[in-house]
Structure formats: structure tokens, C-alpha cells
Length: 156
Image 1 (cartoon, rainbow, N blue to C red):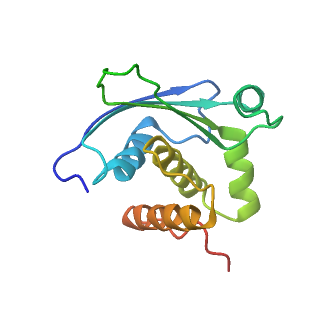
Image 2: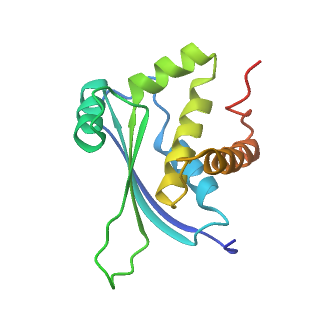
């Protein structure tokens, strides 16, 4: 665990109308929560997109022909370059809104969860097998609880 104050530079951009999408300050707060105790400095970008762009990016980078909720693009720095650049997140707003409705979750809670999930991917965590998935989900639960959000994996 890394202790001390965290230095963040989070750029949030909107590639669609902002109606119903959280403010940049919320995304910055969620990124800070995900990074605190894990990294001291981080620069990353978050881009909110529509379903057309989300589908195009998912098809191009993951060979999956549908829009997904969040895509993580870790920084690929040349050897020897040491910058605090983590990478980029692309969040597909219509998918997030649909999932929140379908799952009966508050929209802000779902955005917070997916932002934290994406940041954890940028920090090197994954969920390729059951053990990794359980560990990552537990970290997400703890971060979200610290922000006052319910367990996103709890089904009543």
C-alpha cells in the first residue's frame, strides 16, 4: 500500500450531451478513491461516449460487436519513460444507464462502480479467473463502501 497524499490529473471529456451523466468532479472523486493507497501519482483520461462510438471501439480493440459499459486502455509507455500516466477509460453512457435501470441501481452508483472497476484495470488488476475476480470484486466493494455506495454485486 502506498501512503500519503495522492496527486491526480484526471481529464474528463464528454462526447455526448451531459444530461444524466455525472459531473467531472464525481469522476475525479471516484478515481481518487480507487487510487488511494495503491499509487501516489496518476494521470488519466475519461471519455464519455454514445453507443455508436462505444460499439466501434469495442469492435476495434476487443473484436466484440456491441457497445460495452467501460473500456480500459492502459498507457503503453516506451521502456525507460517514467510518467504517472495510467491510461484512459471510455465509458459508454447509454449502456451504463440501461444497466442501472435493468439492475435496479442508482445511476451514480453504477457510474462510480464502473469508473473504479476501470481504474483498477489500469492499475493492473484483472478478473480472468475466479480467484482474480473475487479479489477484484472485494476491492471494489471496499472502495464503494468508503464512498457510501452499496455492494454492486449483492443481489436481493
